[in-house]
Length: 309
Image (cartoon, rainbow, N blue to C red; front, side, top):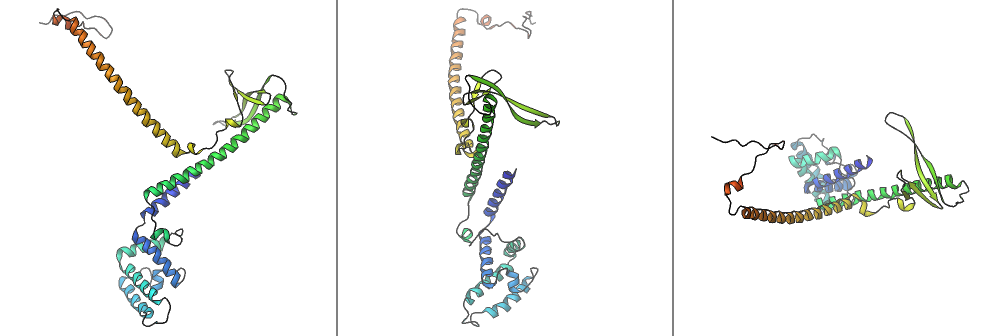
């Protein structure tokens, strides 16, 4: 369940990244530049010293007031004043435009994404659908592979525990193997069913030297050792399994179509030979008699011939 939520979160982040447009990227960069020059936490509204509910005229008035203070002609020796003045004009234009202000207000209320770093990924790299899908496949397959390794380690520990218990039951605590085979029963522990009743599970095993076998009810024996556990492989991850399954289905469908074509050819030949045989049989006889077939009921009895008037 935790893995499901993890993958769902990745999908949501990928969808959100794809939903950002060029205008959003420009707002992200502008927010970073404003905080870098005017102080961390500075917003477009706080820089203009107006509330977020300010009208367009109030924003225009605040812009004129601040632009006079930051005008390069009044601050000839101030470093970076031209960039600040130009940036102020862009901020004012965004807030005075209904659509762009709506975009900014969304991030103003919900916050600008923090994981973008320096802004390089927004301005120069926008992930497409192919990249996002490849990324998700890689991440989910890697997580599944790690889980396979964890399960493999647990299986090895369980096998070692079971085989050690079988050898102890067969040869004693000194573990000195005797001649021939010895049948033992190993307690696998208790489990509770839906009604709450506890049931002890036993496993019949055969020990022969250092080899331990699982004994089936029909008398078959299966060696149990480290090779019994399923080793983790990339081929067992969900994407590789899906690709192999689709490939097999494609080959199966192709083979089925080939067999159907062969069967159709045979059936056509049978029909042709059947027709030829009927025609040959009917040669020299009355065609109406040759074509007459007795009518049979569902029960298999022949119906009496009834003359039509």
